[in-house]
Length: 234
Image 1 (cartoon, rainbow, N blue to C red):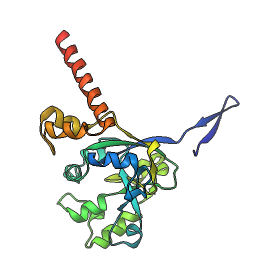
Image 2: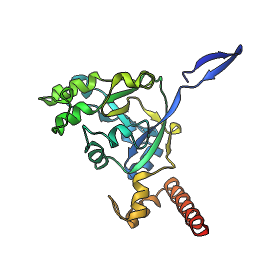
Image 3: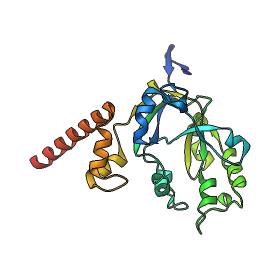
Image 4: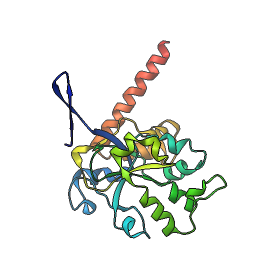
């Protein structure tokens, strides 16, 4: 663990640099994350198999696990320049929210600005000029060049002015640093509204297929029952 030592009243105190980031995964992948798969060479955990890019040589050679610093990143959800970016992303990621413990000073943890790719793929009248690119290669080059170490980004976030920041973890993440988040925004919405990618019956069946997911579902039902009981007592 990469910790910093601080002296407080002549007493050495360990200042941890560990934090959680949030990754949306396919619900069917959880058993593979637990036991390992061909993607991770049989090692349990998350493997950085998704390429950062397709045209730029550095981006093409870099695999990553993509995440956010919060489950519902405000920069994506309330973005006046890229008003549809969050919806498009939600349509293309898994519904299971996974928490990853990461050292912010890990040399394999970065933040990139997806705004350059979004501006190329889905330009609108509100797209800022710096995010307008004529070719995919030009967009990927600009995107790849925005990469900054996670710890540096967190310390000087306002200085970077990223439109659509995303965390990219470029090294294998062992299972002991991966967990199912207590919060499940997409799944909870499906259970409550019977709308979304899966019906209430479909998502319930998927959750009941894995012990950890079934345990989360049972906890969710208990919380809902308590909330309803509290409402009736008011």
